[in-house]
Length: 402
Image (cartoon, rainbow, N blue to C red; front, side, top):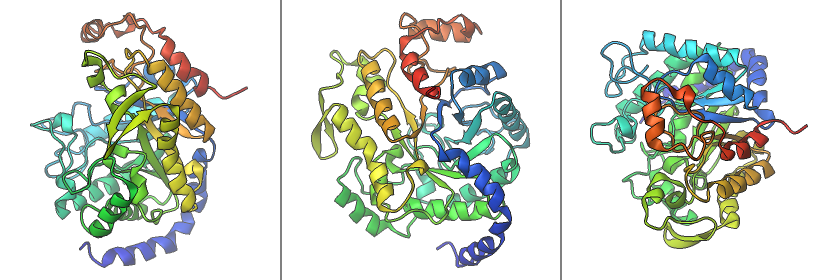
């Protein structure tokens, strides 16, 4: 449905890409050894002190989203202009993004660009009803607009020294209301995909089309792709093969069991505990302990091995738990030890988020949410006590082993 012209375009790119092989190798080899970093999901562009602090912690990269930043002029969505009708990059917003990348580069950090929104898929927290916007998976016009957005952005950023990858979209959910329940068994996922292949719900095909278009303007920069169902580690299980491009990083996010690690658990009269919580997970209940966490994290590595994809092309793009949760320390230790057992690339969620304190592990446990929001609103965020023990669990693994 997307025309036979893409095949001819792919052949043209294959013939011309050799000219960029040396540059491509330079960029992709950043990911040949384990890279550890943090997520930056701030409401405003981070300043130099922010990037300096992240770099000083031992991080080598940052997964950066711009989607929460205030757009210039009368635009609704930063950089995109309007996710309801993409017409081209907002040039004032592009200058803001480029200046932010300059600051990250000055701090010695590599950056993965990770939009929360694309044309036809506005981030749920910015929609009028707060619900997931799945138009991208229902209307071909939006998939064309999303492709054009990435062509435009790659054209603008392909030579920036900070950029280590383009993360095409954060936590896509083409399966939403498309007949595949979350946490389905592998056989159910494979059967669902067999029926959806070639349709607008086909996530691997969407990625292949976008990457092919990007390669026409940027043959070098690696591309990072999240798995489906909010980047669930098991959602790669229904992908029959690797994507066509060889400079792809396959990313998953780790918050399972979400019922225990997330904010709603903190509101329970008796919060779920870890290890030991026996929770509904897809069609059955699962007892969550380190063994269960390991099995979940192992899934994308097993999928990759079966398709001859190197382990160093798998990325844990996000992981975390609520800092005030009693069992957060145990959970972080288990997740990190398992990831490091894979010599994994990873980025914790999140570093000094300016609009939410839930997973800011540097904060002292005595710092309550009310104090956090009041100090941030007063422009006194530097007064927050940042000596929390949870961050030490992360910091000791950020820094290279002597």
